[in-house]
Length: 205
Image (cartoon, rainbow, N blue to C red; front, side, top):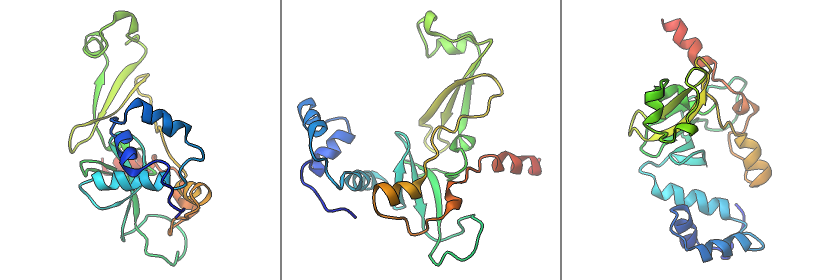
């Protein structure tokens, strides 16, 4: 953990996250030099306090989604004894809904609404000139199964795999950027595994 710096208070940080910090204060934060050494820790601490659950937040990946560390259990990686208490790293919504292993595209665990007609697109894009050609692409809306918050939108050709928008190398981030290596660091964590989920569906069919 890096030493605390009072250049930008936790209270102002919370207002910034909530979009309530006055613009003059935002400009001061942007110009702050040097930047607070513990700004990421403050950010995570504030997010953690807002959640109704206690799993440790490793990284926020969207307005509603977080990669969290689950204590204990099976991590699902290959290899020998790590010498630590291993848990899972999963994607979790602020409502508490979990989407499974963060190495698997969370969109595969969402409720999905597809807008594939001009009429359906017109419901959300009111300017005709701004609408895409529905003969070529469709709009997909991804919703949380728990709270039905809109988690993501993509416009892609029909049949195109859901876009895996963010797959961070958490171990490198914590070790090289924050100087605080994660206890269960291992190369297997940065192995994308999305294909395993549809493969499992095929076996179950």
